[in-house]
Image (cartoon, rainbow, N blue to C red):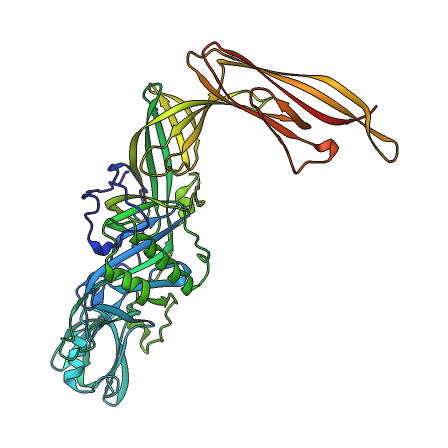
Length: 565
């Protein structure tokens, strides 16, 4: 059974300015090419709001707008959403499993800032004329703001202290109604002394930059965002090279996206070439992730076409509130059977199992990052997708490598004249519908050349011969009657090009001694780590070009010490 992955790509750079982009540069490429998914539906994420919570305007339910995916199994998620504030406050569900145990929450409006982020067992209101007024009107107003949420109420009735818990479905003149698993409960409004909101452990306070807030309404809508790193999502690049003629080929890059983290619904996915230096992904280090988020934000500013919006950089760089992702501890209610709770399993799926035998290419490739972006992508947790990232017509040339006594090998040199670097990934070479080779194309910067092995060179005849030309008997003496002869040897490398085109050959010839000379501008090098007489080694190397049917003989000389008989 195959699950369809939906796409609807808007124009590049058409996303709202508040999405913050992510990392370095945006590349508009082709659409979604293929799909793949598990047949078993993925588990519902624990932080996804219930229908009842969505009915309450004071519950902040941010949607995933963008995620940067790295090849080491980490994703940098950015969410945002509107919420109605109550006296500047809103509540939210469970904190995502952020790497380093941290989370950044910020206001996206220019004239607002998040100044307090609290995490605990849930918002508690005590009607004691200190925390909140004990009047019936104040209780009714506060309970109205908690409609459709799961709450615990402590109240007095007939001089008895009682507790009831469930979904708050009605607030009447004299009673409030809670809907629980074991039936409904009517709680007298005047007797309520305390209310605790269940399942919403996060509280966020938003303040206006304007100091004069006395004339402003207490209930306003705010646009808030959160950013965090988490494990459970990765991508694996793969290339296809289709030979067109003797000089040009078509290079296609695809990325296999594996999502075991959380649902991505109509979000922008940025596949990042290169991995930032994340040190504390396995530790609880709040300050470390705060610095990471600030570094990523700083890197964006110079790369987006119009820069990062000022309100975003101000909030996420300077005033973003960092809170620890500690598991909240809840007090045991008096009537445990009436408490309605939801599992707080926020962990990722088994990414290693989902990836299977796919190659892990998660090492940092370069100091600069390249980002391939897919807009408006839907990929739920547990699904995989193959995304076509680009198709480019490139130039290529042939190169031959020979390191005697091994056979000469034939490789293709791919000229990267595209607008981005090429990440490391397996590459399949096709010619006239037939496969020629499959090997690893390594990271290739813009303007450089990548080398891709093809096969053994069968049309270039090559031969190596050596002969001794001189021997100095007992040239070196050490104690205990040990003598060494100094032997001088000369060698020849013979080449004959049977190809119908000129060929470029790179020759690296190892010698078991000290190289002395080389013909045809050959380069001689000694190994500085092997300087003992019997261990000396070196190389003689050439770069030659042979025309069709041309022959060439390369000569070299070296010396070595051998024990006398």
